[in-house]
Length: 450
Image (tube, rainbow, N blue to C red; front, side, top):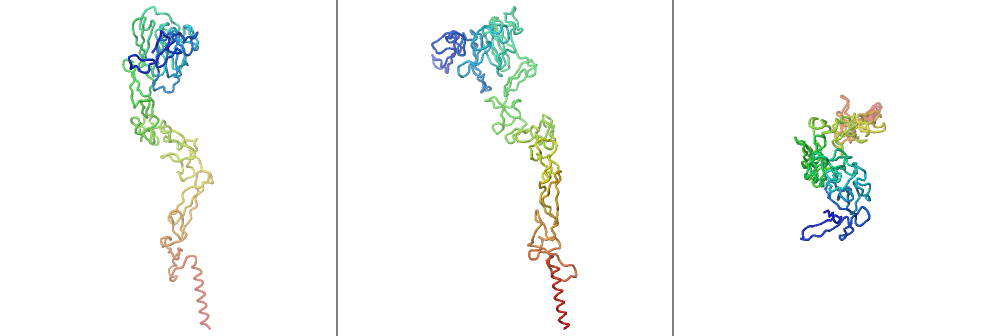
């Protein structure tokens, strides 16, 4: 709480007893001192002078933000300060530094303050200050020291009291608040009233409250509304984790995908079969894509890049249904990681194709010619038959041989021509056997003649 008369801010950790005690003090070196600026001769990073309103910006949406902490309207020092967890001010509005306290230190401008009495922070981090002595309310964008909007005055250089009271004027405003719609409420003390300044949501993006978990919209009366929604538009195709006010970066049973999307490998994808099913009007590789993605070496379903048309990494075969000329067994089947519309040729030293053997013809692995063509040299297996990928070298049964040959002692032999006598001989031994028989016949004939 703000204890203006004692020039300090007190923190009460719990208010459960009839006489609670403060747990911490800011602005004074101890609980028993009550001098302006902590007894120092001038303003500093630890002292206060007649502080007015305070605001604690501790929402879960800004975890880790350096401006997440306590904001104080240090009225007597004509400034607004931010106090970090260390208990020391590290940011100031209205003064050039933390050791100055001149009213309107920069003249009548967007940087000056005179006796500010209230401060608040809206959902996106904008700081609103009731600049009481200048009869206005200023808005400072997050982290900025120059205001970008003013209420109560026609411009930043006008700081005098209003001549008349109207819906556009303020007289000694002493309080300011911003609701979830972005509307600003001002306690216009000098005019004994409270004014609401509504957001003009007719402008694109005017209703954006910076919270990814809300769907922002403008009603027919031009008033902003913010609907808290786990399946918010901003987080699609993922859902919003309400507690942390952020979009989930992956999906699982506890973090499903938004409507119309499917969890595939921890990523949310919109599956499709035709372009009309996609908001982008592009269906590629079975998912909605950001473009047509028709190149032979680009894909919309690469791991971690699903939904975005991306070049296929070098050396990889494109995702089906795309394929390079020759397919996976050819010599032009891989992508080079750069060209989206063509594949690279394998070098002439590369093998290609698939070893096969069918109908007595063996086709061994081929060699690429360097121009994208696989060159092979088929050969006949006769008299042997094929295995699954090559010619047989021996036989165990007749079916291990081609038609017209039989298996004899592990070798395939062909039958004799019709009228050539009976019996079989291995194909490679037929002429030798016939020569031996002829020699034996000649020997017998010679003996009879004697």
